[in-house]
Length: 445
Image: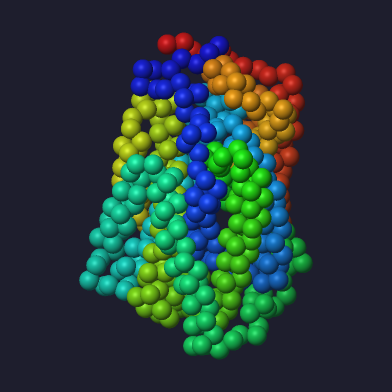
């Protein structure tokens, strides 16, 4: 029942991150913290404040910081101890065929964020320099993203983010100061939203943040580059609550304040916030946007390319060079940046979110059940014995996702329980099957 690999595919154990390839805690921190600078976080918080009230949004964000920190502490320690990526871990968890679905969802979601964030930079370039058309600006954005993947991508990320982090911090502080200077301090910014906010608005906000649990997958693929000696630091600080306090809470507060203070034309969107920043800050605003979006988009491109490579290796048996997949990702991102498909992508992302939440539930349950078996020898043995399909695990995943999607379509108050129900079902069903696993033997070459 061992996995048969083609001549173009290295063994699973060879793709574990060895100690010699691990990064120092400062380098890994710089690489990872690029994820905290997406304007998406500002806009999400402002949107939720407008829908449920600022106070409810703030409570929901605070709860999300705690839950994200606790879950990612578990994932971080496991990834550092084992050196596994999402792709390799999914093979142990779901079997070779089941892991294809996991990596497919992962790279599709990362690619979506690359499209979304890349378009922000392109719109900014086109706004400040009207002579540069949006298609040309989009091409420039994509063209500049691919070279960042040359060589050791993780080391590029930490160097790039070390340069761009000060620009992000200065830019965000400047935007708030300018908003106060130009439009005055709005004492009612904490009252942003409906006159009579829902008493359960904090819950709706909390559940909404569960929809971007793909960051747990991001954590897995980044944390495996951490040194075992730094495991405690990464679990508690780098990938823990301090990171999400800045990414979600402080960025969210800034987003709520800016929307309440700066007059915006049209409905709220990432582009409208972008235009407000450019209106206040001019060329420096474009530099700020470029710094924030390049930081997060570099991570999006990297994770989309690595997981597309893993997915296609399993799906068609052709591994290919990593940079080939980086170019493929760039080409797809560019085409979709030109197409008016954002409404469809947002709908697809809602479905992907349910599958991601179910995967996280399976991962946490598996880690809890095997927490004493994380030695290098044991992991390599598990990889060598990967089956064609772990039926029980895949059934738990699909049943949970189906239940979540069904509840999501009920609408109203019921839809807010789609993600929590998905977690409960995935964990319970997986735990039952884990005690008596059902496997389909691998198909030999």
